[in-house]
Amino acid sequence: MEADAVGTIVWIVSFVVVTVAVTGVAGRVGWSAPVALVAVGALVSFIPGVPTIAVEPDLILYGLLPPLLFAAAIRTSFADVRARRDGILLLSVGLVVFTVVTVGLTAWLIIPAISLAAAFAFGAVVAPTDAVAVTAIAGRLKLPRRLVTVLEGESLLNDATALVALNAAIAAIVSANTPGAEPLTPWGIILEFVIAVAVGVGVGLLVGWVFALIRKQLRSPVLDTSLSLITPFVAFIPAQFLHGSGVLAVVVAGLYLGFKAPVIQTAESRIAESLNWRTIQFLLENAVFLFIGLSLFGIFQGVADSGPGLWPTVVISVVLLLAIFLSRFVWMIFTTSVYRFGPGWLRNRGWSWRNGIAVSFAGIRGVVTLAAVFLLPEETPERSFLQFLAFVVVVGTLVEGAFLPFVIRRLRLPPPDFSQEMTEVHMLMAEAQGQGLARLESEVTDADEQRVVDRLRLNATFLTDALENPSPEGTEPPARAYNRLRRIMIEAERQAVLQARSEGRYQERAVKSVLAKIDVEETELNIGKPRKGE
Image 1 (cartoon, helix red, strand yellow):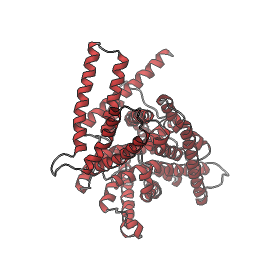
Image 2 (cartoon, rainbow, N blue to C red; image 1 turned 45 degrees about the horizontal axis):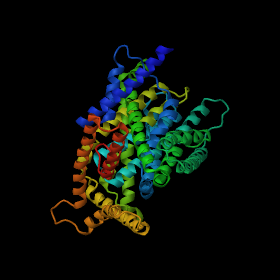
Image 3 (cartoon, rainbow, N blue to C red; image 1 turned 180 degrees about the horizontal axis):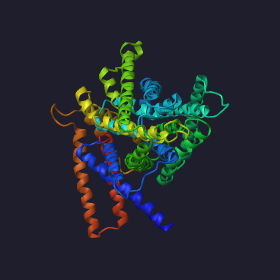
Image 4 (cartoon, rainbow, N blue to C red; image 1 turned 120 degrees about the vertical axis):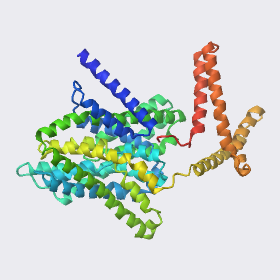
Protein backbone atom coordinates (compact mmCIF):
# COMPACT_ATOMS: atom_id res chain seq x y z
CA MET A 1 0.00 0.00 0.00
CA GLU A 2 2.81 2.38 0.93
CA ALA A 3 4.61 1.67 -2.35
CA ASP A 4 1.39 2.35 -4.30
CA ALA A 5 0.93 5.68 -2.53
CA VAL A 6 4.52 6.71 -3.25
CA GLY A 7 4.13 5.66 -6.87
CA THR A 8 0.99 7.77 -7.23
CA ILE A 9 2.73 10.80 -5.76
CA VAL A 10 5.70 10.29 -8.07
CA TRP A 11 3.36 10.18 -11.07
CA ILE A 12 1.59 13.37 -9.99
CA VAL A 13 4.88 15.20 -9.45
CA SER A 14 6.17 13.95 -12.80
CA PHE A 15 2.99 15.17 -14.49
CA VAL A 16 3.45 18.64 -13.05
CA VAL A 17 7.16 18.81 -13.88
CA VAL A 18 6.69 17.65 -17.47
CA THR A 19 3.67 19.94 -17.94
CA VAL A 20 5.52 23.02 -16.70
CA ALA A 21 8.71 22.19 -18.63
CA VAL A 22 7.03 21.45 -21.97
CA THR A 23 4.69 24.43 -21.73
CA GLY A 24 7.58 26.74 -20.83
CA VAL A 25 9.74 25.55 -23.72
CA ALA A 26 6.80 25.69 -26.16
CA GLY A 27 6.06 29.27 -25.12
CA ARG A 28 9.67 30.35 -25.62
CA VAL A 29 9.96 28.91 -29.13
CA GLY A 30 6.44 29.92 -30.22
CA TRP A 31 4.91 26.44 -30.44
CA SER A 32 1.39 25.48 -29.43
CA ALA A 33 1.66 24.12 -25.87
CA PRO A 34 -1.31 21.68 -26.21
CA VAL A 35 0.14 20.17 -29.41
CA ALA A 36 3.59 19.86 -27.80
CA LEU A 37 2.13 18.16 -24.71
CA VAL A 38 0.13 15.67 -26.79
CA ALA A 39 3.26 14.88 -28.84
CA VAL A 40 5.44 14.37 -25.77
CA GLY A 41 2.78 12.21 -24.11
CA ALA A 42 2.39 10.10 -27.26
CA LEU A 43 6.15 9.54 -27.52
CA VAL A 44 6.39 8.56 -23.87
CA SER A 45 3.45 6.15 -24.18
CA PHE A 46 5.38 4.05 -26.71
CA ILE A 47 8.43 3.66 -24.42
CA PRO A 48 8.65 0.07 -23.11
CA GLY A 49 7.80 -0.13 -19.42
CA VAL A 50 5.52 2.91 -19.35
CA PRO A 51 2.16 1.71 -17.98
CA THR A 52 -0.94 2.02 -20.15
CA ILE A 53 -3.08 4.98 -19.12
CA ALA A 54 -6.79 4.26 -18.68
CA VAL A 55 -9.29 7.11 -18.90
CA GLU A 56 -11.85 7.36 -16.10
CA PRO A 57 -14.75 9.37 -17.60
CA ASP A 58 -16.31 10.23 -14.22
CA LEU A 59 -12.98 11.59 -12.99
CA ILE A 60 -12.76 13.91 -16.01
CA LEU A 61 -16.46 14.81 -16.06
CA TYR A 62 -16.84 15.44 -12.33
CA GLY A 63 -13.25 16.15 -11.28
CA LEU A 64 -11.61 18.13 -14.08
CA LEU A 65 -14.37 19.71 -16.15
CA PRO A 66 -16.11 21.79 -13.41
CA PRO A 67 -12.97 23.61 -12.17
CA LEU A 68 -11.75 24.21 -15.73
CA LEU A 69 -15.06 25.77 -16.77
CA PHE A 70 -15.32 27.80 -13.56
CA ALA A 71 -11.79 29.14 -13.95
CA ALA A 72 -12.64 30.34 -17.45
CA ALA A 73 -16.06 31.70 -16.45
CA ILE A 74 -14.93 33.94 -13.58
CA ARG A 75 -12.40 35.59 -15.91
CA THR A 76 -14.98 36.14 -18.66
CA SER A 77 -16.79 39.46 -18.75
CA PHE A 78 -20.53 39.00 -18.24
CA ALA A 79 -21.15 42.41 -19.81
CA ASP A 80 -19.22 41.41 -22.95
CA VAL A 81 -21.06 38.07 -23.18
CA ARG A 82 -24.40 39.86 -22.88
CA ALA A 83 -23.40 42.38 -25.55
CA ARG A 84 -22.43 39.62 -28.03
CA ARG A 85 -25.14 37.13 -27.04
CA ASP A 86 -26.48 36.85 -30.59
CA GLY A 87 -23.18 35.58 -32.03
CA ILE A 88 -22.53 33.36 -29.01
CA LEU A 89 -25.95 31.68 -29.27
CA LEU A 90 -25.54 31.13 -33.01
CA LEU A 91 -22.32 29.22 -32.29
CA SER A 92 -23.02 27.56 -28.94
CA VAL A 93 -26.45 26.24 -29.96
CA GLY A 94 -26.86 26.52 -33.74
CA LEU A 95 -23.37 25.34 -34.68
CA VAL A 96 -23.45 22.47 -32.19
CA VAL A 97 -26.75 21.16 -33.58
CA PHE A 98 -25.49 21.57 -37.16
CA THR A 99 -22.25 19.75 -36.28
CA VAL A 100 -24.08 16.89 -34.54
CA VAL A 101 -26.26 16.32 -37.60
CA THR A 102 -23.51 16.79 -40.22
CA VAL A 103 -20.82 14.73 -38.49
CA GLY A 104 -23.36 12.18 -37.30
CA LEU A 105 -24.67 11.51 -40.80
CA THR A 106 -21.11 11.36 -42.16
CA ALA A 107 -20.07 8.84 -39.52
CA TRP A 108 -23.20 6.76 -40.18
CA LEU A 109 -22.39 6.62 -43.90
CA ILE A 110 -18.68 5.75 -43.69
CA ILE A 111 -18.27 3.63 -40.52
CA PRO A 112 -19.37 0.01 -40.97
CA ALA A 113 -21.92 -1.46 -38.57
CA ILE A 114 -22.63 1.78 -36.71
CA SER A 115 -26.20 2.75 -35.84
CA LEU A 116 -27.66 6.19 -36.52
CA ALA A 117 -28.04 6.86 -32.78
CA ALA A 118 -24.38 5.97 -32.17
CA ALA A 119 -23.35 8.19 -35.08
CA PHE A 120 -25.26 11.16 -33.63
CA ALA A 121 -23.72 10.40 -30.24
CA PHE A 122 -20.29 10.67 -31.83
CA GLY A 123 -21.32 13.93 -33.47
CA ALA A 124 -22.29 15.29 -30.04
CA VAL A 125 -18.96 14.13 -28.58
CA VAL A 126 -16.86 16.08 -31.09
CA ALA A 127 -19.15 19.13 -31.39
CA PRO A 128 -18.00 21.35 -28.45
CA THR A 129 -14.80 23.39 -28.61
CA ASP A 130 -12.35 23.59 -25.71
CA ALA A 131 -12.81 26.72 -23.59
CA VAL A 132 -9.30 27.00 -22.21
CA ALA A 133 -7.41 26.14 -25.41
CA VAL A 134 -9.48 28.62 -27.42
CA THR A 135 -8.97 31.33 -24.78
CA ALA A 136 -5.22 30.74 -24.69
CA ILE A 137 -4.86 30.92 -28.45
CA ALA A 138 -7.17 33.94 -28.77
CA GLY A 139 -5.20 35.82 -26.13
CA ARG A 140 -1.84 34.99 -27.70
CA LEU A 141 -2.92 36.11 -31.17
CA LYS A 142 -4.22 39.54 -30.08
CA LEU A 143 -7.55 39.13 -31.90
CA PRO A 144 -10.19 41.89 -31.85
CA ARG A 145 -11.88 42.00 -28.44
CA ARG A 146 -15.40 41.29 -29.68
CA LEU A 147 -14.14 38.26 -31.62
CA VAL A 148 -12.41 36.93 -28.49
CA THR A 149 -15.64 37.43 -26.54
CA VAL A 150 -17.61 35.38 -29.08
CA LEU A 151 -15.03 32.55 -29.06
CA GLU A 152 -14.87 32.44 -25.27
CA GLY A 153 -18.64 32.57 -24.91
CA GLU A 154 -19.09 29.83 -27.51
CA SER A 155 -16.60 27.48 -25.85
CA LEU A 156 -18.14 28.07 -22.42
CA LEU A 157 -21.76 27.45 -23.42
CA ASN A 158 -21.56 24.90 -26.24
CA ASP A 159 -20.58 22.13 -23.80
CA ALA A 160 -24.09 22.21 -22.34
CA THR A 161 -25.74 21.88 -25.77
CA ALA A 162 -23.42 19.06 -26.80
CA LEU A 163 -23.88 17.07 -23.58
CA VAL A 164 -27.68 17.37 -23.80
CA ALA A 165 -27.51 16.08 -27.39
CA LEU A 166 -25.20 13.27 -26.22
CA ASN A 167 -27.63 12.26 -23.46
CA ALA A 168 -30.45 12.09 -26.00
CA ALA A 169 -28.37 9.94 -28.34
CA ILE A 170 -27.34 7.63 -25.47
CA ALA A 171 -31.01 7.26 -24.48
CA ALA A 172 -31.76 6.24 -28.08
CA ILE A 173 -28.92 3.69 -28.02
CA VAL A 174 -30.16 2.18 -24.75
CA SER A 175 -33.76 2.19 -26.01
CA ALA A 176 -32.77 0.36 -29.19
CA ASN A 177 -31.05 -2.35 -27.12
CA THR A 178 -33.83 -2.70 -24.53
CA PRO A 179 -36.81 -4.84 -25.59
CA GLY A 180 -40.14 -3.09 -25.06
CA ALA A 181 -38.62 0.34 -24.41
CA GLU A 182 -40.40 3.35 -25.87
CA PRO A 183 -38.49 5.03 -28.72
CA LEU A 184 -37.20 8.55 -28.16
CA THR A 185 -39.19 11.23 -30.01
CA PRO A 186 -38.03 14.66 -31.25
CA TRP A 187 -40.44 16.29 -28.76
CA GLY A 188 -38.83 14.27 -26.00
CA ILE A 189 -35.41 15.53 -27.02
CA ILE A 190 -36.63 19.15 -27.07
CA LEU A 191 -38.25 18.73 -23.63
CA GLU A 192 -35.04 17.23 -22.24
CA PHE A 193 -33.04 20.15 -23.63
CA VAL A 194 -35.41 22.72 -22.09
CA ILE A 195 -35.31 20.97 -18.69
CA ALA A 196 -31.50 20.71 -18.79
CA VAL A 197 -31.12 24.42 -19.59
CA ALA A 198 -33.72 25.58 -17.05
CA VAL A 199 -32.33 23.45 -14.24
CA GLY A 200 -28.73 24.30 -15.09
CA VAL A 201 -29.36 28.05 -15.16
CA GLY A 202 -31.51 27.87 -12.00
CA VAL A 203 -28.95 25.90 -10.01
CA GLY A 204 -26.11 28.13 -11.24
CA LEU A 205 -27.92 31.32 -10.24
CA LEU A 206 -28.91 29.86 -6.85
CA VAL A 207 -25.37 28.69 -6.07
CA GLY A 208 -23.89 32.00 -7.24
CA TRP A 209 -26.38 34.02 -5.14
CA VAL A 210 -25.87 31.94 -1.98
CA PHE A 211 -22.08 31.96 -2.26
CA ALA A 212 -22.11 35.69 -2.95
CA LEU A 213 -24.05 36.28 0.29
CA ILE A 214 -21.64 34.11 2.29
CA ARG A 215 -18.44 35.46 0.78
CA LYS A 216 -19.58 39.05 1.30
CA GLN A 217 -19.32 38.43 5.03
CA LEU A 218 -15.75 37.06 4.83
CA ARG A 219 -12.64 39.20 5.11
CA SER A 220 -10.08 36.42 5.10
CA PRO A 221 -8.61 35.67 1.64
CA VAL A 222 -7.91 32.09 2.75
CA LEU A 223 -11.54 31.43 3.70
CA ASP A 224 -12.85 33.22 0.62
CA THR A 225 -10.59 31.30 -1.76
CA SER A 226 -11.43 28.01 -0.03
CA LEU A 227 -15.13 28.58 -0.77
CA SER A 228 -14.26 29.55 -4.32
CA LEU A 229 -12.48 26.24 -4.86
CA ILE A 230 -15.57 24.17 -4.01
CA THR A 231 -18.07 26.35 -5.89
CA PRO A 232 -17.87 24.54 -9.27
CA PHE A 233 -18.55 21.17 -7.63
CA VAL A 234 -21.43 22.54 -5.54
CA ALA A 235 -23.00 23.82 -8.78
CA PHE A 236 -22.19 20.85 -11.04
CA ILE A 237 -23.21 17.85 -8.92
CA PRO A 238 -26.74 18.99 -7.87
CA ALA A 239 -27.52 20.12 -11.41
CA GLN A 240 -26.54 16.71 -12.80
CA PHE A 241 -28.51 14.96 -10.05
CA LEU A 242 -31.63 16.99 -10.98
CA HIS A 243 -31.22 16.03 -14.68
CA GLY A 244 -30.02 19.51 -15.57
CA SER A 245 -26.88 20.71 -17.27
CA GLY A 246 -24.04 20.71 -14.73
CA VAL A 247 -21.86 22.49 -17.26
CA LEU A 248 -24.33 25.35 -17.61
CA ALA A 249 -24.72 25.57 -13.82
CA VAL A 250 -20.96 25.99 -13.37
CA VAL A 251 -20.70 28.59 -16.13
CA VAL A 252 -23.64 30.64 -14.82
CA ALA A 253 -22.32 30.52 -11.25
CA GLY A 254 -18.86 31.55 -12.46
CA LEU A 255 -20.15 34.44 -14.57
CA TYR A 256 -22.34 35.65 -11.69
CA LEU A 257 -19.59 35.52 -9.07
CA GLY A 258 -17.05 37.07 -11.44
CA PHE A 259 -19.47 39.93 -12.12
CA LYS A 260 -20.18 40.42 -8.39
CA ALA A 261 -16.54 40.08 -7.28
CA PRO A 262 -15.84 43.85 -6.88
CA VAL A 263 -18.67 44.23 -4.35
CA ILE A 264 -18.52 40.93 -2.44
CA GLN A 265 -14.76 40.41 -2.07
CA THR A 266 -11.88 42.30 -0.56
CA ALA A 267 -8.99 43.33 -2.81
CA GLU A 268 -6.77 40.70 -1.19
CA SER A 269 -9.36 38.00 -1.82
CA ARG A 270 -9.74 38.96 -5.47
CA ILE A 271 -5.96 38.82 -6.02
CA ALA A 272 -5.68 35.49 -4.19
CA GLU A 273 -8.61 33.95 -6.08
CA SER A 274 -7.29 35.10 -9.44
CA LEU A 275 -3.81 33.68 -8.85
CA ASN A 276 -5.11 30.38 -7.48
CA TRP A 277 -7.54 29.77 -10.32
CA ARG A 278 -4.99 30.71 -12.98
CA THR A 279 -2.63 28.14 -11.49
CA ILE A 280 -5.30 25.45 -11.25
CA GLN A 281 -6.46 26.16 -14.79
CA PHE A 282 -2.93 25.94 -16.15
CA LEU A 283 -2.12 22.65 -14.41
CA LEU A 284 -5.40 20.87 -15.12
CA GLU A 285 -5.76 21.93 -18.73
CA ASN A 286 -2.20 21.15 -19.76
CA ALA A 287 -2.15 17.92 -17.76
CA VAL A 288 -5.21 16.79 -19.73
CA PHE A 289 -3.40 17.31 -23.03
CA LEU A 290 -0.40 15.37 -21.70
CA PHE A 291 -2.84 12.70 -20.55
CA ILE A 292 -4.33 12.51 -24.04
CA GLY A 293 -0.90 11.75 -25.47
CA LEU A 294 -0.15 9.12 -22.84
CA SER A 295 -3.46 7.37 -23.62
CA LEU A 296 -2.79 7.00 -27.34
CA PHE A 297 -0.79 3.77 -27.13
CA GLY A 298 -3.59 1.90 -25.36
CA ILE A 299 -6.17 3.23 -27.81
CA PHE A 300 -4.01 2.25 -30.78
CA GLN A 301 -3.82 -1.26 -29.37
CA GLY A 302 -7.61 -1.47 -29.08
CA VAL A 303 -8.11 -0.28 -32.64
CA ALA A 304 -5.47 -2.67 -33.95
CA ASP A 305 -7.33 -5.57 -32.34
CA SER A 306 -10.89 -4.66 -33.38
CA GLY A 307 -10.70 -1.80 -35.90
CA PRO A 308 -11.43 -1.99 -39.63
CA GLY A 309 -7.75 -1.96 -40.60
CA LEU A 310 -5.04 0.62 -41.18
CA TRP A 311 -6.08 2.25 -44.44
CA PRO A 312 -9.84 2.24 -43.76
CA THR A 313 -9.05 3.86 -40.41
CA VAL A 314 -6.94 6.54 -42.08
CA VAL A 315 -9.65 7.27 -44.65
CA ILE A 316 -12.41 7.43 -42.02
CA SER A 317 -10.29 9.72 -39.81
CA VAL A 318 -9.55 12.11 -42.67
CA VAL A 319 -13.17 12.22 -43.83
CA LEU A 320 -14.46 12.93 -40.32
CA LEU A 321 -11.90 15.67 -39.75
CA LEU A 322 -12.95 17.25 -43.04
CA ALA A 323 -16.61 16.95 -42.05
CA ILE A 324 -15.91 18.68 -38.72
CA PHE A 325 -13.96 21.49 -40.35
CA LEU A 326 -16.39 21.97 -43.23
CA SER A 327 -19.43 21.97 -40.96
CA ARG A 328 -17.91 24.84 -38.98
CA PHE A 329 -16.84 26.64 -42.15
CA VAL A 330 -20.29 26.29 -43.77
CA TRP A 331 -22.03 27.43 -40.61
CA MET A 332 -19.77 30.49 -40.43
CA ILE A 333 -20.70 31.33 -44.05
CA PHE A 334 -24.35 31.16 -42.99
CA THR A 335 -23.71 33.21 -39.81
CA THR A 336 -21.70 35.87 -41.63
CA SER A 337 -24.39 36.10 -44.33
CA VAL A 338 -27.01 36.68 -41.63
CA TYR A 339 -24.89 39.48 -40.17
CA ARG A 340 -24.15 41.02 -43.55
CA PHE A 341 -27.56 40.73 -45.22
CA GLY A 342 -30.01 40.06 -42.39
CA PRO A 343 -32.07 42.44 -40.24
CA GLY A 344 -30.74 45.93 -39.65
CA TRP A 345 -29.94 45.36 -35.99
CA LEU A 346 -27.65 42.49 -37.01
CA ARG A 347 -26.04 44.36 -39.90
CA ASN A 348 -25.00 47.03 -37.42
CA ARG A 349 -22.98 44.48 -35.41
CA GLY A 350 -20.02 44.84 -37.78
CA TRP A 351 -19.32 41.12 -38.43
CA SER A 352 -17.03 40.76 -41.45
CA TRP A 353 -16.10 37.83 -43.68
CA ARG A 354 -12.61 37.92 -42.18
CA ASN A 355 -14.11 37.43 -38.72
CA GLY A 356 -16.04 34.43 -40.01
CA ILE A 357 -12.92 32.82 -41.48
CA ALA A 358 -10.98 33.39 -38.24
CA VAL A 359 -13.73 31.73 -36.20
CA SER A 360 -13.79 28.81 -38.66
CA PHE A 361 -10.18 27.96 -37.77
CA ALA A 362 -10.74 28.22 -34.01
CA GLY A 363 -12.65 24.95 -33.60
CA ILE A 364 -10.23 23.28 -31.18
CA ARG A 365 -11.53 20.27 -29.25
CA GLY A 366 -10.23 19.16 -25.88
CA VAL A 367 -11.23 17.95 -22.44
CA VAL A 368 -15.02 17.78 -23.00
CA THR A 369 -14.62 15.57 -26.06
CA LEU A 370 -12.17 13.39 -24.13
CA ALA A 371 -14.63 12.94 -21.26
CA ALA A 372 -17.79 12.62 -23.35
CA VAL A 373 -16.61 9.79 -25.60
CA PHE A 374 -16.10 7.52 -22.59
CA LEU A 375 -19.70 8.14 -21.50
CA LEU A 376 -20.92 6.05 -24.43
CA PRO A 377 -22.60 2.89 -23.04
CA GLU A 378 -21.03 -0.51 -23.51
CA GLU A 379 -23.70 -1.55 -26.03
CA THR A 380 -22.71 1.27 -28.40
CA PRO A 381 -21.70 -0.22 -31.78
CA GLU A 382 -17.98 0.20 -32.54
CA ARG A 383 -17.47 1.88 -29.14
CA SER A 384 -13.66 1.43 -28.98
CA PHE A 385 -13.26 2.65 -32.56
CA LEU A 386 -15.36 5.75 -31.81
CA GLN A 387 -13.12 6.45 -28.80
CA PHE A 388 -10.10 6.30 -31.04
CA LEU A 389 -11.73 8.62 -33.57
CA ALA A 390 -12.50 11.14 -30.80
CA PHE A 391 -8.80 11.24 -29.90
CA VAL A 392 -7.98 11.73 -33.57
CA VAL A 393 -10.37 14.68 -33.66
CA VAL A 394 -8.79 16.26 -30.56
CA VAL A 395 -5.27 15.91 -31.95
CA GLY A 396 -6.34 16.95 -35.46
CA THR A 397 -8.06 20.13 -34.28
CA LEU A 398 -5.08 20.97 -32.07
CA VAL A 399 -2.87 20.76 -35.16
CA GLU A 400 -5.40 22.92 -37.01
CA GLY A 401 -5.17 25.45 -34.17
CA ALA A 402 -1.41 25.56 -34.61
CA PHE A 403 -2.00 27.08 -38.08
CA LEU A 404 -4.33 29.72 -36.70
CA PRO A 405 -1.55 32.34 -36.24
CA PHE A 406 -0.70 32.03 -39.96
CA VAL A 407 -4.36 32.45 -40.90
CA ILE A 408 -4.77 35.48 -38.65
CA ARG A 409 -1.69 37.15 -40.14
CA ARG A 410 -2.99 36.59 -43.67
CA LEU A 411 -6.43 37.95 -42.75
CA ARG A 412 -4.82 41.11 -41.34
CA LEU A 413 -7.42 41.42 -38.61
CA PRO A 414 -7.01 44.63 -36.62
CA PRO A 415 -5.38 43.90 -33.24
CA PRO A 416 -6.80 45.40 -30.06
CA ASP A 417 -6.01 49.10 -29.72
CA PHE A 418 -3.97 48.87 -26.54
CA SER A 419 -3.22 52.59 -26.63
CA GLN A 420 -6.92 53.42 -26.72
CA GLU A 421 -7.60 50.89 -23.97
CA MET A 422 -4.94 52.45 -21.73
CA THR A 423 -6.38 55.91 -22.43
CA GLU A 424 -9.78 54.68 -21.32
CA VAL A 425 -8.20 53.12 -18.22
CA HIS A 426 -6.57 56.45 -17.35
CA MET A 427 -9.79 58.41 -18.00
CA LEU A 428 -11.87 56.09 -15.83
CA MET A 429 -9.21 56.11 -13.12
CA ALA A 430 -9.14 59.92 -13.17
CA GLU A 431 -12.93 59.97 -12.81
CA ALA A 432 -12.74 57.56 -9.87
CA GLN A 433 -9.94 59.54 -8.24
CA GLY A 434 -11.99 62.71 -8.65
CA GLN A 435 -14.80 61.12 -6.68
CA GLY A 436 -12.29 59.98 -4.06
CA LEU A 437 -10.90 63.51 -3.80
CA ALA A 438 -14.38 64.93 -3.30
CA ARG A 439 -14.96 62.42 -0.49
CA LEU A 440 -11.61 63.38 1.06
CA GLU A 441 -12.53 67.07 1.12
CA SER A 442 -15.81 66.27 2.86
CA GLU A 443 -14.18 64.05 5.50
CA VAL A 444 -10.96 65.91 6.32
CA THR A 445 -10.87 67.82 9.61
CA ASP A 446 -8.50 70.21 11.36
CA ALA A 447 -7.18 67.29 13.36
CA ASP A 448 -5.75 65.65 10.20
CA GLU A 449 -2.11 66.55 9.59
CA GLN A 450 -1.71 68.82 6.57
CA ARG A 451 1.16 66.90 4.92
CA VAL A 452 -0.96 63.74 4.95
CA VAL A 453 -3.83 65.55 3.25
CA ASP A 454 -1.46 67.16 0.74
CA ARG A 455 0.00 63.79 -0.20
CA LEU A 456 -3.47 62.35 -0.77
CA ARG A 457 -4.49 65.37 -2.85
CA LEU A 458 -1.32 65.15 -4.95
CA ASN A 459 -1.87 61.46 -5.74
CA ALA A 460 -5.53 62.03 -6.59
CA THR A 461 -4.96 65.03 -8.88
CA PHE A 462 -1.89 63.81 -10.81
CA LEU A 463 -3.74 61.70 -13.38
CA THR A 464 -6.49 64.30 -13.94
CA ASP A 465 -3.89 67.02 -14.43
CA ALA A 466 -1.95 64.82 -16.89
CA LEU A 467 -5.10 64.25 -18.98
CA GLU A 468 -6.19 67.89 -18.92
CA ASN A 469 -2.70 69.17 -19.76
CA PRO A 470 -1.23 66.67 -22.24
CA SER A 471 2.42 66.68 -23.24
CA PRO A 472 3.52 68.19 -26.56
CA GLU A 473 3.04 66.10 -29.69
CA GLY A 474 5.64 63.36 -30.06
CA THR A 475 6.49 63.11 -26.37
CA GLU A 476 5.55 60.36 -23.94
CA PRO A 477 2.24 60.94 -22.10
CA PRO A 478 2.75 61.77 -18.41
CA ALA A 479 0.77 58.79 -17.13
CA ARG A 480 2.84 56.39 -19.25
CA ALA A 481 6.08 58.10 -18.21
CA TYR A 482 5.03 57.82 -14.58
CA ASN A 483 4.39 54.07 -14.94
CA ARG A 484 7.73 53.51 -16.67
CA LEU A 485 9.77 55.49 -14.14
CA ARG A 486 7.86 54.10 -11.18
CA ARG A 487 8.63 50.54 -12.31
CA ILE A 488 12.31 51.46 -12.41
CA MET A 489 12.04 52.82 -8.87
CA ILE A 490 10.17 49.72 -7.69
CA GLU A 491 12.93 47.47 -9.03
CA ALA A 492 15.51 49.48 -7.07
CA GLU A 493 13.32 49.47 -3.95
CA ARG A 494 12.94 45.70 -4.09
CA GLN A 495 16.71 45.25 -4.47
CA ALA A 496 17.25 47.51 -1.45
CA VAL A 497 14.87 45.44 0.67
CA LEU A 498 16.53 42.19 -0.42
CA GLN A 499 19.93 43.66 0.36
CA ALA A 500 18.74 44.66 3.83
CA ARG A 501 17.41 41.12 4.32
CA SER A 502 20.75 39.59 3.33
CA GLU A 503 22.50 41.85 5.86
CA GLY A 504 20.07 40.83 8.60
CA ARG A 505 19.19 44.43 9.57
CA TYR A 506 15.41 43.86 9.80
CA GLN A 507 13.12 41.14 11.03
CA GLU A 508 11.71 38.84 8.36
CA ARG A 509 8.15 39.93 9.11
CA ALA A 510 9.02 43.54 8.25
CA VAL A 511 10.82 42.45 5.07
CA LYS A 512 7.85 40.39 3.84
CA SER A 513 5.42 43.19 4.64
CA VAL A 514 7.40 45.75 2.61
CA LEU A 515 7.86 43.32 -0.29
CA ALA A 516 4.11 42.65 -0.29
CA LYS A 517 3.36 46.39 -0.47
CA ILE A 518 5.82 46.77 -3.36
CA ASP A 519 4.22 43.81 -5.15
CA VAL A 520 0.73 45.31 -4.77
CA GLU A 521 1.85 48.61 -6.31
CA GLU A 522 3.63 46.82 -9.15
CA THR A 523 0.50 44.78 -9.78
CA GLU A 524 -1.51 48.00 -9.88
CA LEU A 525 0.86 49.46 -12.47
CA ASN A 526 0.45 46.32 -14.61
CA ILE A 527 -3.37 46.43 -14.63
CA GLY A 528 -4.53 46.84 -18.23
CA LYS A 529 -1.09 46.07 -19.61
CA PRO A 530 -1.22 43.20 -22.16
CA ARG A 531 0.59 40.07 -20.99
CA LYS A 532 2.07 37.45 -23.28
CA GLY A 533 -0.03 34.33 -23.52
CA GLU A 534 -3.20 35.88 -22.07
